Length: 318
Image (cartoon, rainbow, N blue to C red; front, side, top):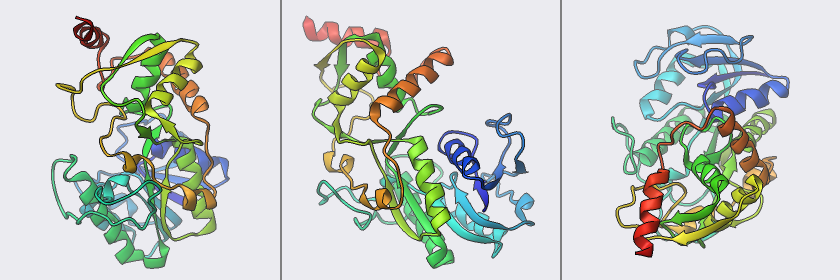
């Protein structure tokens, strides 16, 4: 199978390329050449820039499938599809759970949950625009490719090479042990999916030529946020005491903290039936811990710094 990946050198895309290569696929990459330029040296690369609409490199060639990892606005997918024309078989778009309405859903919601109103353009990607832009991207892919369209909607993805710091924050924090400040209810459910499970699902869907939408959520067993922190501590060989602290003044989108619990309890049944594995949370945490230590534990962009956490805990004890 010949697969073109739009992206493919960062996080989820990197995992997809690695899995596709293990499956024996012939993989080509379209990217700017700015991230992961030293990865996959034997692959054919097409250089371009989606931000400027530069798809000139894609005006020749044909592929059995394209995996769109880096489409965030409708113009991204429209321009890519215009450039590729009828020279691709299946178009698999990596979307997001942010496409869904949050009100009126219950635990176990499926891929048929109502989506938000589409948004055709916005320069800033934030809580208000990101999901709605993804809805419009999905619509564009479905309108153009119909039964040859596949949509994968990952939850919060975790694993080595994660640039978001979201799961990494808790892995690193639990590894320090001691009193852990948590500005949320420890009983909050949380869904993280290993990047390699997302990749396996994508490659399986392409191999089976399956249309439709699929939740990519994990882990293998339901877990609370408190349970996730404790799992990370066990993996690191430490002990933690979770201390619930006020959320006042905490930055929005604190790692894995979500006010709407049913959005963290979506059904993975359709994706599991299509071949998505379920990596145990312990394995994901161990691999992220090893990767983070191997890169020298650079400063994280999310969560409390050690100094901020100590101050929060001190105020609580005063």
